[in-house]
Image (cartoon, rainbow, N blue to C red; front, side):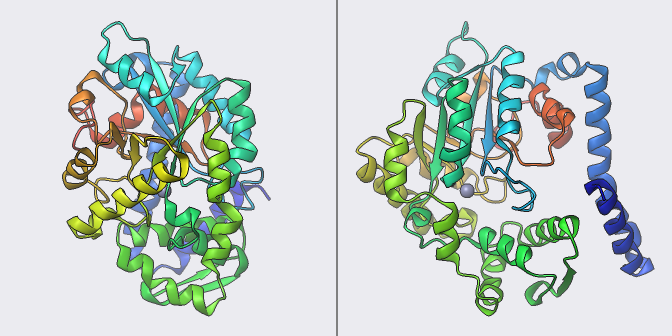
Length: 371
Ligand SMILES: [Zn+2]
């Protein structure tokens, strides 16, 4: 049965199990993404996106990836396939953008005659970035920046997202006590849906993320072992850092939600990561990506800390493209997620034409600065 049909079945099952008084809210949760997809599809087919959303399109665009997986379904669609990375590179180039380093991008932003560009960034330092992404990047001579926490390199970070995925892969039912929720994990759509729901429940709460710890312990989910399986070692990172297409950036030491930390703790976490990477690689670390990167995960305080620690620029995951105005907001640059499996051609187009920013932020805010 197709993924689509399975999804329809799952939605029907979920609706039938929901008490009638709560059904409207549930339908709303389904309706919004559906409306977004329909809008993206309609704009894509009309080929009008590049004209209609010109104000939302900056000289630059920073794109975010995580894992680049050979079998995206086996990993609950949390990354993208190498073929999708290739599609993104070709789509970006069709728009007349050169793929450049962050250094070059910032110079182009400052230069009134600077040509349009795109930045490719990969978070967390996954092994598959070298195994599956690098061959594609070499084929197109496309430079990238990898943002890497030392807590993952040293296998000490609380990588709840890897633990949760592994748990959902292994189990056919799951009771998540802190969330007071029960999940039937019959097939791929029910597993990806549970992953989405639990991740959305965690939101940007470190306390909720850590509440999953007993679930991992009770199910023999070994986080250091999972990190070892998926993430590069310090030795691997040293090797890839020597590649001419690769720049290494900071991503905090522990990969926690920064907004949950006290100011000194937050600053120490970012500083430790910068110093670790500089000592390991013998080079300056000039760029930072905030973990999770949303408005509730990082903001003005983190912007000030990043500037204090001497970063040339820092990336969020606020949707939007890069404009000249961002030279005054270098520590809160927007960045767009394109590195996940279910992405359609129209969803990618929406991100490149600016429609995505228009839908996320409304009509009055083409340039993402503080929000
Ligand atoms: Zn990350």
